[in-house]
Length: 84
Image 1: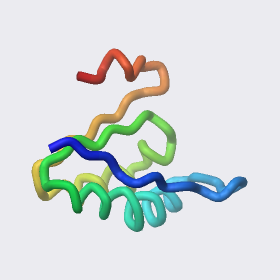
Image 2: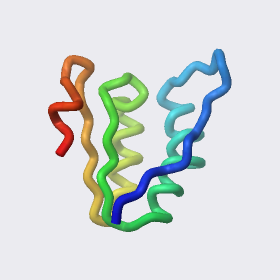
Image 3: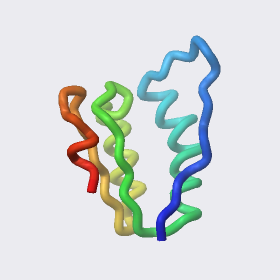
């Protein structure tokens, strides 16, 4: 099954640090959306500092008690080449 999450907007001027990313975008938005589609999914994000923060990676590992793939790409990676 293919799916996509809802759009999640951030107010202009909001600083996206690791805490905001985890507490607001992931926990209140993206992860519940993803969970509603399927227990089998791939979550892909780039190498932004909020994405690479140890607490963020730990949260995603904790969330991944189901079949879950996390793809992190560094800023220098051409993500379009990495997509299937």
